[in-house]
Structures are given as C-alpha cells and as structure tokens.
Length: 323
Figure (cartoon, rainbow, N blue to C red):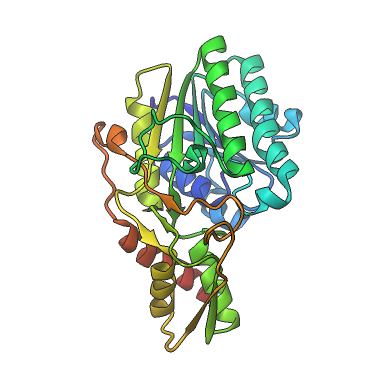
C-alpha cells in the first residue's frame, strides 16, 4: 500500500477485523472502521481510539447513509463484516441474506457512487466449495455447490463484487478462508469447548461424530497473507485460498482444549450429529484448501493446524481468565 492510502474496514471491531486494524495502523495508514457491534466489541480496538489515524463509526451496512459517512475519501476497502455463524444459516436464512448479501450490495453501491475506491478486499469462505471431490481444493475447482445458506451467501457476494469490479473499474481480492482462530475469537469449536468446560469441567458435548476434519489457520498468518495478497495481486479480480496446509479433527481439538485448561478425566459426549456425523445441517465434514497460489507470492503459514489450535486455546483461556 502507498503511504497516502486511506483504508475502510467493515467489521473492524470483530475478531479478524480488529487484528487487521492493528496491522494497518502499524503501517502508518489512516483507517476508518464501520461496525454495528453485533459480534465485534469496542474492547478489541480500544487501544486505537485516541489515535488520530483511526476513525470509528458505529453503524450498519444496511444503512447506506452510515456507510457513506465511514467510507468518505477511502481508496481501499476491506469488507469483513458478516454474520459468521454457519450453524445459524439453516435456522434463520434471512439473517444471513440481509447481513451478507444485502450488506455487500449496499457497500458496493456506495463505493460505486463515491468513485474513490481503487481496491476492494473481501473475506469469503471455504464453504463456497461445498463438499468438493478434490482435496486439497484449488481456487479453480468447479462446480461450486455450497451446502449451507452461509456458503451460498458468500458465493453470491463473490459474484456481485466481481461484477462490480469489471463494470466500475476497481481491483478485487477475494480470500476464501479456512477456519481462522486466535485471540478475540467469539465463535467456533475452540470458543464453544472452553465455554462448555467452564460450565461443566467433567463432561464435554461434541457436536457430530467427532471425525469432522478441517484446516485451522492462526490469525497472524491470516493477516500477513491478506496484506501480501493485496500488495502482489495483478489481475482485475484475484481469488486466493487462505488456510493451513494440514488438518485436525474436532475430537483432537477437544483433547487439546481439555489439556490446555488443565482438566483431567473429562468425558466426551458425542451427539452423533446429522447427515452422516455432521455437527449441524450444512457442516462440511472434510475441508482442506490448496494454498499454492498464495505461497507462490512468498507467503507460508508459520503454524500447522494443531499448533494453531494450541496457541488459539492458550489465547482464549487467558482472555477468559482476565474477564
């Protein structure tokens, strides 16, 4: 990025967004954040509130006026705001449609009208692939058949953003994320396990049959890749898979959480799950992304999935203890 860039981050008070804001501000970049605090917290960005390079707008992407205020004079957009709960999408699909698709459309419209945006970075998801026959899954895998409404909304957003890029002339970088974990995370298996074990340290309920096997990437590796991809991307639209190069299953994650919490003799209670052992409707049982495209730019994850899970668990247990 240039020294005179002004960056707009949606969801900048959230888990990934706040870590991104930390990194951007160390680069002496002006950063505007829009967040409705539905999942993000002021605690995540409190260290920046007195920084003259930082502006926080409490607002919602469903309100175009608030978006216009926050986007003013910004030339790079990082669009991270979304409803992150994949499980919710089978129960309340309209929430995902509004908070993911409609919100993205509103942001694109404001960007089109202002005309100042040069680059638009979007955090999509591995769920756009559904259950691919090819593992690890490359970016050009087809057909894309999401099995959750969440995955469908992310794919719809990709299509909208791509069309706007070609029609209105800005650059787009789309990241299809694996499971990103680390400090400040408020959802996902590790967060849920810690919460359950604090409530009952003798028994842990595990959704599904315990064999769900996925890629987990530590937050600092994620942010490093996102900034590098923006810097190195050449084409009008670039799509990058972003994850670790290996996997871990949910039962192994549970064991790590138990160990990091210093607990013993915890009984695991597997729910058995739905549709062949899934944790919930739309849960992808096996996910591993081919990240060779990002690696070709000079990036490589520092932590493997198991190492990332251990570090993220330490982070979250420490944060819980401080509350």
